[in-house]
Amino acid sequence: MNTTLIDSPFRPVCGIDAFNSSEIEALAKDGYFPRNRLFDRSFPDKFTAEIERLIAAGILKPAVDRIENGVPTEWILSLGEVWGHGPGSMPFRESPIMANFFHEMQQLAADYNRLRPLLISTGWVSAEEVPVLSTLGMELNINKVIGSLDAQWSGLHMHQDTHRFTPGLEALPEESIRHTAIRGRAFTVSGYARPLGPDGRRRNDAGGALPFLVRPKSRNPGDRAVFDIVPAFHNTGAFFFPHTTHGVGRMPATDSVRYSFQAFYPSAEVWSELLPRISAGELREELSPGKLHGV
Image (tube, rainbow, N blue to C red):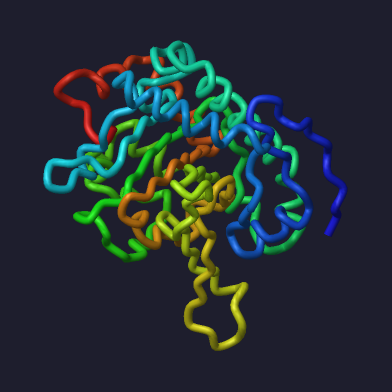
C-alpha cells in the first residue's frame, strides 16, 4: 500500500487531525476506524457548553420521537442545506462555534477526496464503493442525550446510515430531496463529549457506544458475525462508511449525559443531482409548514 499522504493542516477551531495511513487502511478493510482523541483538549468542553446554551435559547429542541412520559431524553439540531439550515441561516448566525465547527467538518471531505486513491489501492474497496464526496452537501446533527429511568433500553438497533431508521426519518416521502440525500450518503463521522461528574471524573459510561458488525471479507473463515465496539467516551469518535452496519449499544446511565454529533457526507454525484431540484424550489416547498417531516 502506498502510504504517502498529502499533509493537511491541524484544524484551528476544533483541532481535528487529517487521516493517517493506518486509518485509511482500516476504513477500507473493516468499513470503520475509531479515534480515541478526536479533537484537541479544549474543543469538546466548548462543544458541550455551546449545546447547553443553544438548548437554553430554544434553538436546539427536544426530538419529538425521543420523549418518555412527557420528558425529553434527547435534543437535536440538524444542520445542512437539506434540513433548511445551511450556512448563514439562523443557527449559524446565533452560534459562531457551531458555524466554524460545521465548516471544519466540511474540510474533512476534501481530505477524504485527496486520499480516495489510497482507499482504492488497498484492494478492499472498489471505486464505486467509495465515491467522491460533496463538501457542500454535508449534514451535521448535534445531540444531547440524557439517561432516564424511563429510557434505559439496551439494544443495538443495527442499521445503515443510507436507510431511514427512525420514526422521524421514516416519515419522509421517498420522492423527497431529504430521502435522496440520505440514500446518497457516502461517509459518516460520529463523535462524543461527556461532562464531568460530581467526583470530577468524566461520565464515561457505555451509553451511546457504537457497535459495528465487521464486514464478512474481514472476518476469519467460518465466522458468522463479529462485533466491535467504539465506546462513547469523552473526545472519542468513529469514521465509517454509512453502508457499514452499526448501532447504538444503550442509553446513557440514569442521571448521565452524552453529547454527540454525526456528520453525513453525500457523494458528489448525488449532490449534483439534487442541486437543480433545490434551485428549482423543490426543497423550499418540501420544508414549508405542513409538509415538514423528519427534522
